Every structure is written in structure tokens, then in C-alpha cells.
Length: 319
Image 1 (cartoon, rainbow, N blue to C red):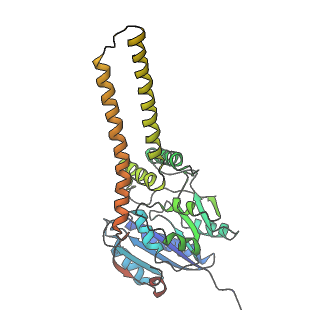
Image 2: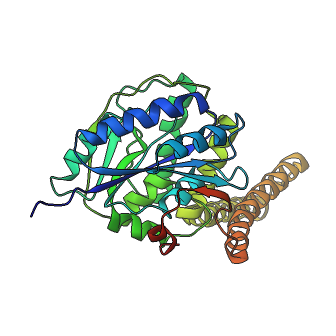
Image 3: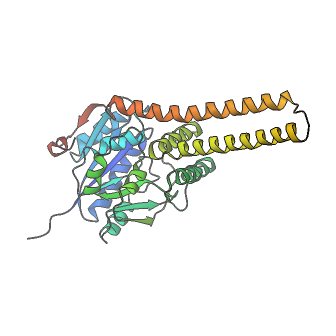
């Protein structure tokens, strides 16, 4: 009796790349056919403004192994990825972007590397075909993230990866609101490897991550993954108090032993405003943590689905 083919699930969050979808699906099918393996493609429409759901519906109608998930609104890329992963049934799960910067042909290399005994394999984009701002902001994000969390991250790694179904099962248990897929996989600690892949120009549109969104993502991720900002605020407060105490002792000695009158209301006012600014800064940090706790306490679902196409019964049991 021959060994059954593995099933590879390919999860693709869709936003702003409608014209790429047919080519994407064709190239994924051709690549997986050469492995060889069975497949399912999950196209998760994150309320794409270019009416991508119409194209997803057409593709799913032509191929029952292409499954469509239409989210009720735009929840964000990593929530769309979560929606796809919640509905996969494959032995191995690939996550990739929809704009063809992640080459579908690299799925074969990721799968081959995974067969060496790895449970997660990431695609390394050593030469990135992104704007200067996006490359620099990505490096800055991971440096700041590593500082606050104590991790050692690789800024050349993003969502494009393959993971065993037991890894995805573990991922499904992580339901916090602040989400970043590759960092979650790294946190879980499974046996991980990476391979260098070719990174292409975008097939359509431009990245939805502007500077403001990147800063927000960085803040949310750091607050969700580390309490180091709170410890830093305590340390800053301690050193300011220590400095104030030493300066007060200095003024005390000048007044009583050197017979020098202490002058300077300006320095007093500047010090007051400085201390007040730091207090508000620290209150802001504490407020961010309280806000995150509030969001988690509400217990809202990570996403809502408006419609599904070609849904599998096995996937229903995984939710």
C-alpha cells in the first residue's frame, strides 16, 4: 500500500490585490502538484476595497479545493491569517501574502526543508523588494522589540512560512487580541529553520502599512509581549528621586555650612515641569497596559465571518 499524500493548506489574507489572485492560485497548484501533495487554498477576504470577494467566489466555483472566507469587516492582516488557520485541515500549513512578493514556487523548498525534521520553516527575504522606508522601519521594529522582550529576532523573516499541523493547533489556542503571526510561532519554541528565498516586486497595489500603522503595531506588540516598559519607568523614577535627593542635600550643605542662599525660581519651575512630564509619561505607559487588559477582558471574537465558500466539515470542528 502506498503512502498517502500529505495535504498542504495554503492560507492567504486578501487585501488590495484582486488581479493577482488567479495567477496566485494557478502557481500554487502547479507547485504543490510537483511536490507531490494534495492541497487546499484558503483565501481570506479582509474586506478588500477592490471587491476581491467576487474573484474569490469565481475561483472557488471553478475549484472545490479553493475555499473562500469573507470577513465581516477589515480586521487586519494577522486577524485574517488567524481566521484562515482556524479553518485549515492540512498536515502542513503555508501562510503567504497575496501580492506575489512571496513566490508560490518557494513552497516546494519550504516543504522540502521541513521534511528534514523541522516543525516550522520560515522564508528569509535577504534582498527585499520594498521601499527604503519599509525596510528601515522593519529593522527598527525588530530591534526595539528585541530590546523590550529579550528575544533575538530576524528582520528578514515575515509571514511566509510552513508549519506542521501540531504547531497550528498550538497557535489556535493563543486568542489574545494583539497578534503577530511569525512572533507567535517563534515564541512556541518548536524546532525551527529558515531558508533564503527570492523576494519579488509587488504584483499589484502598495503596502497598507504606513508609518503610523507600523508604530501602532510596534507599540501594541511590545505592550502585549513584555512588561519591560513598566520596569523602565520604575527605574527612571528611582534615579530621578535619587538625583533630587542628592541635589537637595547639596543645597542643604550650601545653606547651613557655606552660608550661601539658594536662588533660582526658574530652576525650581523647570524641575517641576520636568517631573510632571515624566509622571504623565509613566501614567501613559500604565494606561496602555490597562487598556490592553480591558480589551482582553471584553472577550470579543478575533474576527467575524460574513460568508464562506467550499467549507469543509472537518474545519468546523477546529473552531
